[in-house]
Amino acid sequence: MKSFLSSNPKGTGKNGKGFDESYWSEIYGNGLDVDGSYNAKEHANYLHALFRLMDIPVYRIADFGFGKAILLREMVKTFSPVKVYAVDASQNAYEDLKKKDWVKRSDKFHIYHSSLENFILPKLEKTPVELGICNSVIQYLPDSEIPKVLERMAKYCNYLYFTVPTNVDYAEMKKEMSFIDPYAYSRSAKKYRKWLSRDFEIVGYNLLQSKWLGEKGFKEDFFRI
Image (tube, rainbow, N blue to C red; front, side):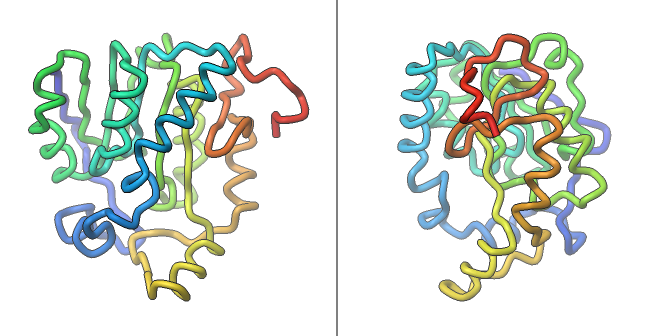
């Protein structure tokens, strides 16, 4: 296992706070009702089946904001990549992942403690990974940072498994569960789609195809939005 620490690793939410232990307990809780955690295996199986259908091999994975790494673990188990790059702005998440047995037993992991705004890895731009993961992370970045972060991810991975809650989603969560995330920016789906459209195409449920990718795996014009 290899690990790295950037010179300016700390990211903050809308409220100016870092993602320390209080964030994980207040916002994430036990994770039993968080999409991508309680059903992480189903997400991984779905994506694996879709990639098999499209005859797209996955040799390397990158997780941009791995958090509790529940989804990352299932993706690693399902795809069996030879290399895994994982980055998170949280010191707690970074330290916790390094201690995981399934990480310590392997030499395939490259773990970084950095905000996405500061995360620069030139070797991934030269040789992008097949699959990137960015699960419910972009809502914590300010508007000014999102275009360059999305461009960088589009250059770092051919496909991105991507989710982000919109203002409509947050309204529903507040109504149904009295849930409010003070770390997150509440934005419209239209705004996120506009940012994404410069560097990605939506080719499936939660799945984006990089416009920087030369030979497209998802070639059908009708499904490339």
